[in-house]
Image 1 (tube, rainbow, N blue to C red):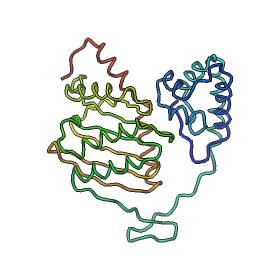
Image 2 (cartoon, rainbow, N blue to C red):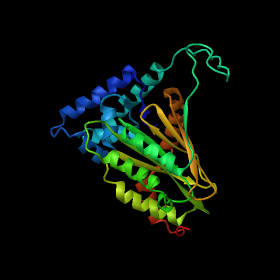
Image 3 (cartoon, helix red, strand yellow):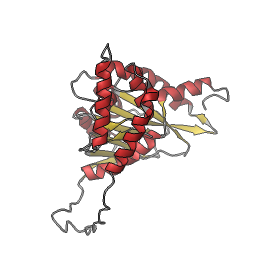
Image 4 (cartoon, one colour):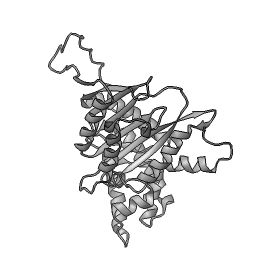
Amino acid sequence: MSDQRSSSQAPEPQLAFAAELRELRRRTLKKPTEEALARKMGCGRSTVSAILNGRRFPNWEHTASLVEACDGEPSRWQDRWLRAGRQIEEATKGPRAPIPQLPLLGGPETPGDALLSAHWYRDNREFYEAASARVRQARSEIRVTYTRRYPPTQYTTRASADYFRTILDWAGEESDDERSVRRIIGIPERDGLPDRDMFSWARQHHEDSKDILNYEANVLRWTPAADGLNMALIDDSVVFLAFSGGPRQRLNGFSVEDPMFMTYFAAYFEQLWAALQPLGTYLGEADGSRTGEPV
């Protein structure tokens, strides 16, 4: 089970489980900080904060790691975690809502309907400049994907380089805000072997980011001989979608600022994230493999 994000109003069993974890932490003689717990758990500080404050129900791996970091015995918490998970599942079930009638394409039909407003970006520079500006304004969470045939270092526009640097700078910035960056990196493979250039960039990226507690990256093994649809989800309302292909520098896209629109892409991101390996684990397994070298 992956970590389950709470809605704006977390279920009572989720809040109760978080309270139990906070009490365990208070009983720990050293009373470890969120940063110390994050280091022991191998995750970002914002993840620890979200778990302890009841905004996220942890998966079992995170639960066991947190309990152990607080000098507890994970085996004694397994039944509590299972019971809380069942209670949360029941609490979030409700009567099936009626299917709403879709508005006509011509415009809103009722005060509750609205047409989405999109900002269109004609090229690489426009897209990355706009995305970088929104990253700098982010409050708490950034979720991004990078699934292309070439590493970011092979794109020459200054705007694209600034975008990747801005995300790491935002994640590593000293701030009282709770921050979290999660990136899905698609590494192209052919005949089971990773692309040499992307693999080399991923290794360097891991070195550059491994000490940023608020930054996490997972790897998607990418086999199609084409770029994927890439997205940046900023906080809970802004979606950037990028389309690329053909010439290496070609990229355009659009952004939409709408919480409902965001939920569809956020759900897809979470589905992918839960099934993927952390970047460090992927690199370690690739380094230990004797089946071949990157192509």
